[in-house]
Length: 119
Image (cartoon, rainbow, N blue to C red; front, side):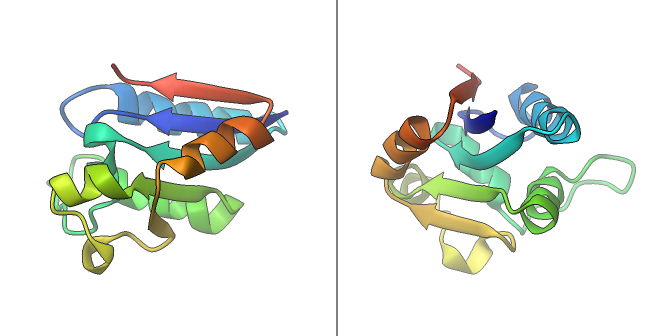
């Protein structure tokens, strides 16, 4: 099964980022293809490479970058939501990309499922 993910929450103020990442890992482990993760609203802050959590905490931006590098998952941030939150190409994680909202429609069309995390 081909899966797209929509993530609408920031990395440390809501469980959605952790849950979406764990879902992606589990889906890949079961042989499914996670095609893309589209970040919308506060979700775009997940790709900020400037986040610097304490050593004993998880590094959510690094997780998304690793998922992209290891499994070819596109990690895409909505341009409008990114601009509102000061996210630009200079602070994107490796493997992250800023794109238009129309890409979300493409993800929904080309995949068997679009799974949404966050409010």
